[in-house]
Each structure stands twice: as structure tokens, then as C-alpha cells.
Image 1 (cartoon, rainbow, N blue to C red):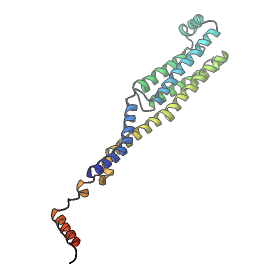
Image 2: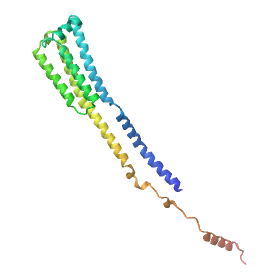
Image 3: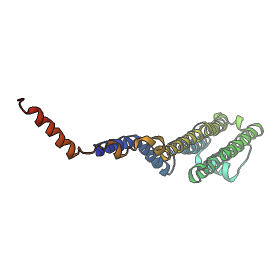
Image 4: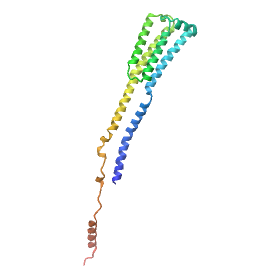
Length: 222
């Protein structure tokens, strides 16, 4: 009987600790990943930023007279007032800085994207005011606006999605680990001693007396 009670107690403790251990293992498996899912989404969007601006710049080169000729004009004979090459370099700068900070170094702060967004915003505002891009057709409007919007979407994605979700996951992991460390203290009365269920065997003297009494009662009355 004592063994059955101890096995039932052990079974209850194992059932209670099973979810906690499973959750800890899931969090540890998530930590072993090279990068979280939401951070990987952010890095993909940063890559999309570079590719999209590059595509628009290549289309602009084709529209204005051919890639080879326009590359010579905008790159070799660079003019701040007319060239779109600096907007492409700005996208390359954002990509390199953000991937290095948040994918390679796995930074958990907003200062890197704050720097890239501030540089992008200031440069584009000055270029639109000072240069003559607005007189060069639709791409004079499209490239600065697209670059500006993508930079601020990256800022919103990191500040409101990536960093809060990773902080929440870390807090949940620490709380589950803390609960698992203090789990034996939550059920101090579960360990039942075997002495509480011990029943001593009946003594032989008592059994002999009972047999004599029964024998006397069974004798016929004279």
C-alpha cells in the first residue's frame, strides 16, 4: 500500500512538472536559433528595401537613355543636383548598417536604426530642396519618397515589433525557469512517509485468546 501511495505521489509530481519542463525545452530551443523569426522578418524587409530602390534606379537609367550611358553620367560624372546614384548608395548604407547591427551583432537596442533613419531623412530632405530632381519626371518624385517611406517602416517594425516581442519572450522564459526552480517548494506535503500507512500484524496471543473464546461458546450447555 505504501508503494502504491508513493508511486501515485510521484506520478502527480511528474505530471505537474511535465508542462514546465516542456516549456523550458521549447524556450531553450528558441534561444538556440541563430536569429528569431520576427528579427528574420525585419532583415528580409531591409533586404527588400535595398533591392526595391536598386530596381527603381535601374528602371530610371533605362528610361533616360540606357544603362551604360546613364551610369557614365550619374556615377563617373556625378552631380548632386541631378544624379540618383546617391539615393542608391543611401539604400546600400542602410542595408549594410542594419544587417551588421541586427543580424550579425544581434543588437537589442534602437540606436543603430535611429542613426540610419536620421541620416536618410536629413539627406533626402536636403536633396529634394537643393537639387533639381523634381524637374526630371516621375522618378524625381518616386525615388526620394520610396526611400523615405521604407526607412521609416523599418524603424516602426524594429521599435514596435522586433524589440518588444523579443523582450516578452525573454521575460516569459525567465518566469517559466523561475517556476521550475521553485517547483519542489510548492508541494511540501506531497512526500508522504511510509510509516503513516504501516499496519502492524496481529499478535499471536490475541489470536489464541479469540480461538479459546470461540471454543468455549461452541461447547454444549450441560
